[in-house]
Length: 112
Length: 114
Image (cartoon, rainbow over all chains, first blue to last red; front, side, top):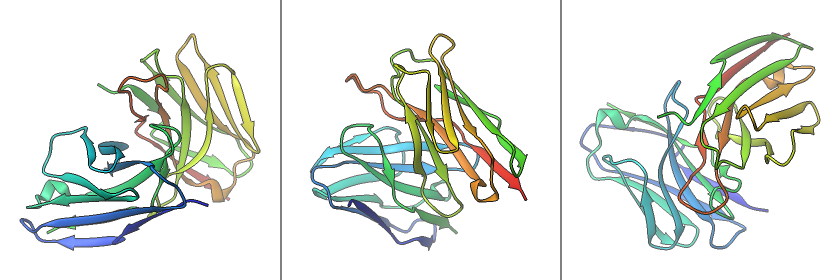
């Protein structure tokens, strides 16, 4: 069966520090991968998605970037965190674009 | 522009009652409508999904009703239980190519009182 792992579960970072959040998927090949940010009362906002190694599409211009160095690895990064980057970050995968998406348990990021 | 509008924002139901959450969409190209359930500190989990070729889909106590002409769909939770207390998200997407992605509603926080 397929599983998705995200780490860390929680992270507290100072403003201006770098960020690296990692997501890996097991039990499937060539998945579509997604990064979302969830803010209270605002639902899930798609940040990036990837249909293959090195292929990244950005949905919202921001202080973040994404990379896919391996087939089942998706990384969310920032060079300098802003206070507004605080939130709950979720990674998801699907076999085909959109259909259906399975989520990891997220990373709670707090910026101080 | 919010493409999927979800209501209510919060809902309190007594144990054994029926919980109803509604969603409306604008894009007629949408042809896949999933519902996700999210518990605190966890990622959303796919609960049930429907395509517009049927008007209703039932899985256990959970039922999706779909009205294509009104561009509305709803989740009904029968015999609601305290363990159903969670945040529910509707979503929509187009599977017919193009660049449409899964678009989520803003969520409904359901509380089922014992």
